[in-house]
Image (cartoon, rainbow over all chains, first blue to last red):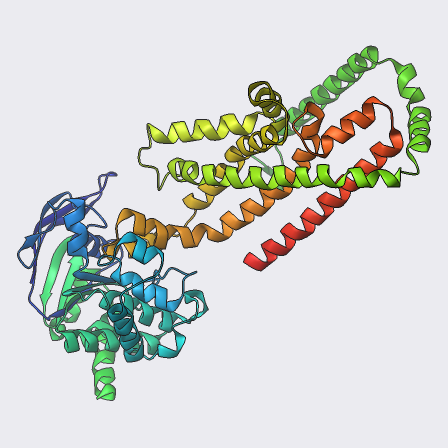
Length: 262
Length: 271
């Protein structure tokens, strides 16, 4: 469904953030991207929808090659990729409803969106999504009145109302407390399952990733170091990705948690 | 090095002896320059007029009080003109300042090397010339009257508003813009959804602030014939009608106080 071929990103400063990354994500697969800060996780995600322009390589979304698209065609393809951000990236001074509906901007003309005259079907869908994440009563609140967890739910709604085939999720839980983090991760994974979406989730919390995803990619210095099942993350593998550290506690904790969750 | 080793004790001083010597020299030069300037000014001053000033001031004060209250009936129209000059001038300035600001801000300009310098030039050139001078020029071009005043105020305010606005645009949170871009929104939609909501409070603040300044500036435009209460002020001054002058000054003061109050209220309501 999504295929990266020899994707390279070299920043102007000469830093090579991605070194010829190859990756194949089948339909409906939720995968976690782990790795130390600066390993290129955010760059990888942003190179897919070209918020960052890749230096070379190809990105295929379905049959469409993204890196060579004109800006108009790129906009159309971006509609199929919902994005969720670390700091939620809601437009703070707009209402929850406006933020959710902004996910439809790619489908609606300028004046309709400027005058906030979205099609009724979009509004219905927005209410349905807000209801699904438990925020239907908040539709009229301004985004900056919400708590972190609530904001991230709005961010999720904004991504889903695009009716995407793929979710790009950048550190969804980094600004949230542990409990909310789990709720948000669970919500994202449930929604992916319900809608058959593929997702790439950047995440720092290895334990959290192991709890929820089907596949883990370990990135180090812009190259894929590990690609496998969450169970495959042994202390040796984590040392490979992150460097030397006592990993036993991290992994054991995961097992406890997943039992407790069941 | 401010830390010295003195008999095994670490002595810390704010400056090294060399630096403090430098400081003394700087002060000495400063005082010398001041004394020299004082002398020059003193030579160029006719001290008789300075010693005489309190007496003259007192004389004018007694002539100017009490204000000629019945003159107020003739001031309604001019002060209304003044308010209109300020308000319309601010309005036109904002309409022109918004595109200039978007062209000047580093993150929204279409071209950093070509269009941005032009926008910055517009900002600098309109800002650097006082509205009185603009009014003088415009009176020569379009003739005396309120319209010249409006345009003078508008031109003078473009640079001010555009500068503050483009600084606000440069300070926006880029991740919000990124998020809107990622939905597949067009350039104009990104502007309307990602940027405009973020700068709206700054925009409103700038508009009210500039309106407030413009009320003050437009009161003097009449001195050069560009309409408003300044016309009355200049004609009263010309005929030495001090009681009228004092009343005009009181009216201007009242207008400025009211505009301050309004702008404070509006700003409080927005933010």
